[in-house]
Amino acid sequence: MQIEQQIEAILFFKGEPVSRKKLADILKVGQTEINEGLEKLKGSLQNRGMVLLEKDNDVTLGTAPELSYMIEDLQKEELNKDLSKASLETLSIVLYKNGVSRAEIDYIRGVNSSFTLRALSVRGLVEKTVDTKDNRRYIYKPSFELLSFMGVKSVEELPEYEEVKNGIDIAAKNLEEETEREEV
Image 1: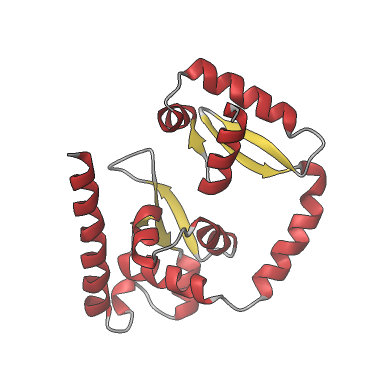
Image 2: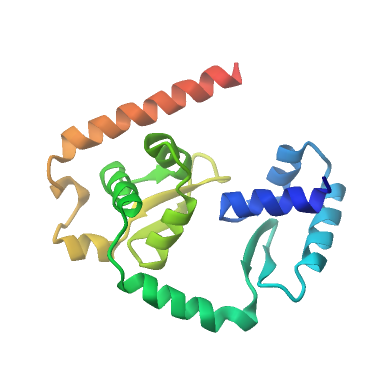
């Protein structure tokens, strides 16, 4: 399998920007191979529905600009639909944890949540910020619009806040312990 195919698969799976260094670490190759693979991927995506987006040292897959009108229509349609069960689960975790990484959400839910988080972000329900403890990952928090829509001034006003938050914290702690065991 060629490196550009591997990079494409990683970017598709992640669904968010990935640093060139992270790609090199995942694929166990040097920066030269990553840069060459990205150039080949960029070439193979020409005249297709996706493009390779680059910002600083991060790369991600995006929609070809000439198709943006179609995606905009789909987003409008999506915004008018009710939230799915997956969206409600994810939103609950983000609300009660009030600052949670995608890895924690994935662990708690047992499935990849990148597309769900993107949909919630597009709707303006969650905000993504760089983690102050590890600038290679993002933290998801409820947006002010969501809190306003729910009629609460802070997450602490949510129903059974302490009880639910404790349950989520226990699940998140299990993830930390598993990660530490794997690193040893």
